Length: 192
Ligand code: AP5
Image 1 (spheres, rainbow, N blue to C red):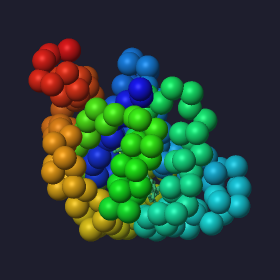
Image 2 (tube, rainbow, N blue to C red):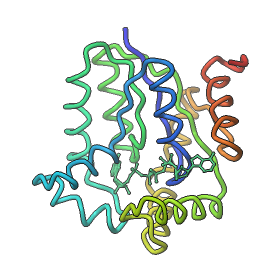
Image 3 (cartoon, protein in one colour):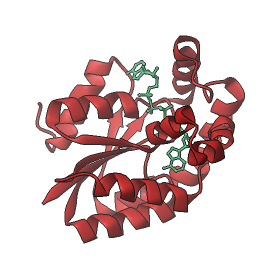
Image 4 (tube, rainbow, N blue to C red):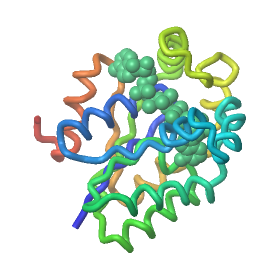
């Protein structure tokens, strides 16, 4: 039986950073829908040309396209031990994921809600724009990404709280401090 962890949280919360570490240290595969989309854009695929302007605006890619990508990725994994990073982001995606995990017999080990105040999110993302030049890390797009998160993705906090799988993580502090909190949450409160 496989198992899955979901990283939920606003843009800049540190989902990708911590998901990578969890994958490297605990043998999960990281499935980042944002990374997959950016790889299509970089390769100039048909999908990449379609979604490029959506990412540049900070809007969400339509659910059907995302679900197709996620299914393809999971199908390519032999024994699913998956971290979902940046997915699901809407009710439709969350409901589809529930069905998919049930079909595959994959247990949801936890939904990690990484919580960081808005000013710090903006600071981190503008800092990354300077360092890496990600095209959606500019002030106007960041504001839209945060608004889209609040409208479309934040309601999933309630969705997962109802199932008892939600674990809130304070995302402020050093990356090591956040990592220790994540390990403790996945160990049901025991220190790593
Ligand atoms: P996606 O790639 O998922 O971007 P995001 O959610 O906006 O998240 P980020 O990557 O910006 O932040 P993060 O929380 O991963 O933080 P990170 O670790 O990088 O999505 C991009 C776009 O793709 C979306 O806008 C949408 O258009 C589309 N998309 C993707 N998935 C979709 C879906 N499911 N449905 C529809 N559309 C979808 O860290 C951020 C910065 O902070 C880094 O510089 C990092 O070094 C730094 N940092 C991390 N931790 C700390 C710390 N503890 N202290 C200080 N700095 C830190």
